[in-house]
Length: 320
Image 1 (cartoon, rainbow, N blue to C red):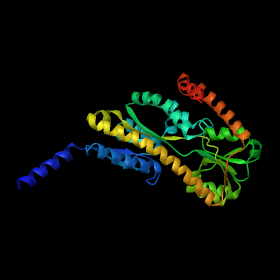
Image 2: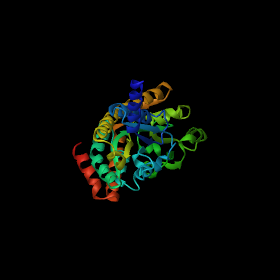
Image 3: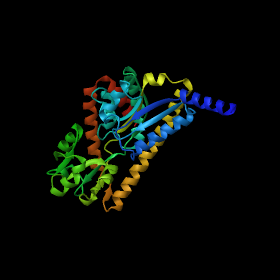
Image 4: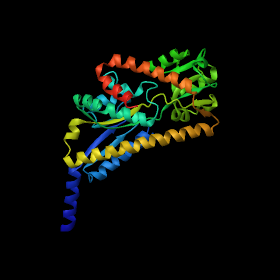
């Protein structure tokens, strides 16, 4: 009886000592980003010996994607995940990874993040937040109804656009921008409302676009990233050993997430091929033209953001 009582008291003490967090994300539970976060939560609980339990809330269950950063900042949730481009209105430097035709490989994307991270840390600290890790989506590719060899092939075509950058790309290539939600892409292709678009192989597979469009070019237009972060006050309230468990697990999640992104990109491209789509690279001269377009986008972005942007792009281009 005494042993049972002591065990019950010990269990109650552990339960009392455990801290619980909620981590909000706007993505589906099936997304590789969410799967990575769920593994991160398990790793934290194990590394902290049960001192911290993180409950992952996917699919906009707690807050809509674009509201998550503010909700965590306000302490309505202890942690969250969002796509970095959703923060550019308040933190312009967060948009560095989404400038078209600058980053062209996972290696480039990692160099960009290494330069961007200290600035994100500074802006987050000013807002009572702490960045844990970031993981890129697979690169954005070009879907086209007909073979593409140069920018001249876009003249007279309609390109799906969904933000300022894609509208600019369409206009610079000589295509007509058309606003089409992703869920309506197949209908728009079938009706002739659009002819081409820039999005990832993953998105193409999820929406089964192979019935209407036959060419996919691996132009690696940009590598947008998701970032996972916490409320700084919630983090500071943890015991030092638990803080270290969170940071160690976050580092592991970043490494694992980048590998997962590569695997998902390769698997999705393979699926497009298996479904009868022609997957190819664009000619070298057209690729060089897109690079020049990227340099123009970079200069415009630096002018709009200010001197802070030079802390990313000057070393980024020098190191190439």
